Length: 408
Ligand SMILES: [Zn+2]
Image 1: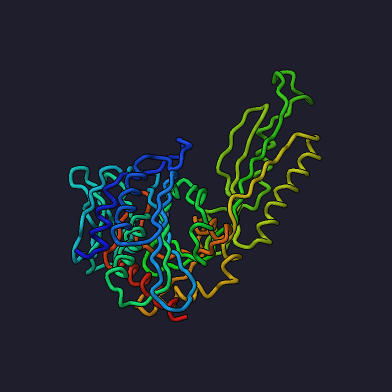
Image 2: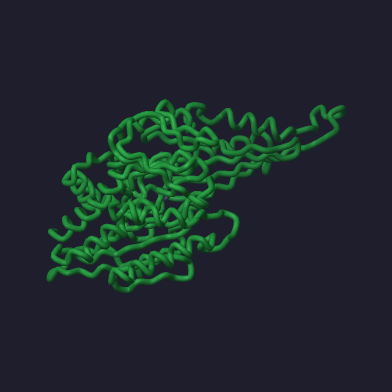
């Protein structure tokens, strides 16, 4: 078994599922158990400044062995797994020389991963695939990334003849509940830029994501006995209904892709007296993003005119921004990753993320941070899987990036 797989199999046995409800960081104690194990391994490898803080953030430094200055690169991955599906008692299964057909994950429960549902499986015919046993997620998101970084670093410590600049390592808790960047000390981390090893399938390289806002719109009505309601009752639900039909019907997640933005109604609730709509607003382009928020505001103003002052109120909050703005000025860091992939025989797939990453937040905190594949598929559920060959390539990409930087 190759080093990266041995590590991966060990790490997925830690239950590190994060939890939105505890209000703690890390949100669950299991993450700290894995963090302690990783800290121990980093120390055993002889890294410098290995630290694990009370919030579960690990940082460590592989010192430069060059006699000249090169930029300090960082690699970042998250230790938690999604709250959406159990990560307890993960029992990975190996499918060697995969035949390209359906995979029976669990005979007892008759859980089958079908090629008809997941046609990308066919790309891995002849490779070794690691799956779950159908009862849990796998945790390749993002323990594949953790194992890949650990393996690359271990390789460099075992091969001192390979010349490299300083490489800084960061492992974070609670990415899956959107808090992975909250207590990330960018200054202490001390890298000029970094890569999150948290993408999906082999070749993924991402440096663009949505600008994101959350909007809550409240409608006030007036309840009166329906028998005496003429010219008196105002039904807030009907106003809310009128409002939502004014948003462009094709600009919704289920009808958009690529660089197209949307207004997504995520919740509606109400009665005659009061109704609420909740939207998330997404756009890659900052100008369009502002225009979308402005459009919602102007609709609210218009409805206030029609139904009376205070009848409609809007609360809008920015959630995160497109990291492209912060990466464009240092675009060479994307070029290095792209070149590294090509040199190890991986075809780069540069695609925008229709969501956010911790890297986008880190980029706005001063650490430009594109995202690179860790190799997995079908994250956050029982059908999660990762091909061994993709993880091994990811390790090669990390090593090649370090090499390319050492030659700058
Ligand atoms: Zn992830």
